[in-house]
Image (tube, rainbow, N blue to C red; front, side, top):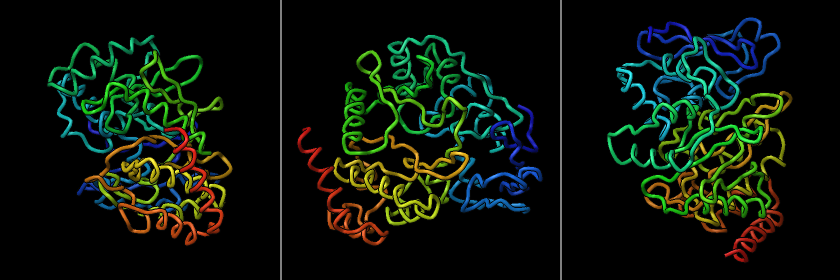
Length: 361
């Protein structure tokens, strides 16, 4: 790859701005002069729409901005990108953040796109899920790249999270389909699917979910619609929070939701997710497992995702509740009242969710 001096950021075919790296590898971003006239902030807390050169901090995104870090692969996506680049004779460690964004190009999550674009578009080919599942096991358990590395890379779309996954287009819809990791039970797809149904019963806004071939969990992409891509930012990107370690309390997350959306109904949606995570002991509730979306007229909480029991950091919640990593119902109620949810309403939501989960054991 050629050295990239400038990355231009686009959204819905409109140039949003441009980004360069300083001599000490900090990213500097400025909005395009035309975008300043009519555009909305792509990251309201850290990149307000104004004529200014914004300089990123060193941490937590290695000199980058959180909203653009959301576009980069992590976990499984990083592993596949690393293997793919090495197969082409490229040392991943030699790439700058700008070059990494160039590799994402137009294939990333959300609506942001980057130019120059060195991405490899999905071929939308008919995929053999069983074969891909076998190939992901080979990659996870050895240095062998298997026979499907290029397919896994093209269909990856810079996915986050530890579990292997691909993006596919089926039935005129775009789906994220997951495979098991080395530590997952063989029934992990069915488990996650069942928890997605439970979440919906508990009044949580979830995307459409599906169990492909009776074993592979699939979720319809909520960053895509019939009208095109939807700008999406994770809580990590929005708040400049390190998702690789405990960095948030639900109180801060709920307050941020209120400030951003200006709508208590969105806050209550997020509160339901918090209660559900506590109830099922989903302790892997890090800052990238919550997102917000710009709908062209307002900010809203994104549909919930990655809702299933998990161990988190050392068996504790990654996002604390009332500063407790092992929260009680009392901690949950305390948080509710602090952020403006009446105690009676909070207790009713808690009882509703725990009763539904108890009756579905």
